[in-house]
Length: 284
Image (cartoon, rainbow, N blue to C red):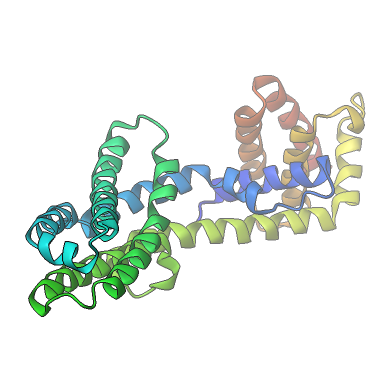
């Protein structure tokens, strides 16, 4: 479950976005920014799971290279123009490069050199292309002698199984019962819960914004509400709603949390201002 602090932070950001730009109702890009830290943890976990799932793949691609050498005569007999031989060599190199890049991705993540998240998003869908190429190759070598044909099918079937595990990492939501993905499911669930709770909280505030703003305006008599920064105003509206509408919540808790948010978003001066305004609202 998302913590109260994270929900309130997200609600403040959403309120700010809504009032700063009425058209911005918190789309996918907004939530990607809000959930960036959790998304980073999610992607790190994906790399760990992917590395675990792909153990042995690089060795298998080396075996594919050996099979190309062992079956050179059959390959040439099937296509004297040597196009098949060239295509198989290219495909073998692509398979080996993918496995190598997967291993490098894990090392990049541990070193935290940056850019690895982009590489992850690039790497995951590439197996679909590799799978399609394998299907096409099997069609082209159907006339091979059975022993040579079986060497390819044995390796390709194993690569297909590796690809199935890549799909689990790429789309973990499609595999809710896969225990190896439990941590990914938990992080994803928490991000969705955060979004749901923050939207609900922001909607409550927005529904009462006229009443809340009147209280803020009265508590900041020497400071016109129009001059309050939009971030500070979002914090005041959220805490003001809690103080005025949640009778079972101690006002001091809302004030302290709002001051903490103001420190985080704007600094000490804003925190002092927020504290003063909310204190007056709580006593009115």
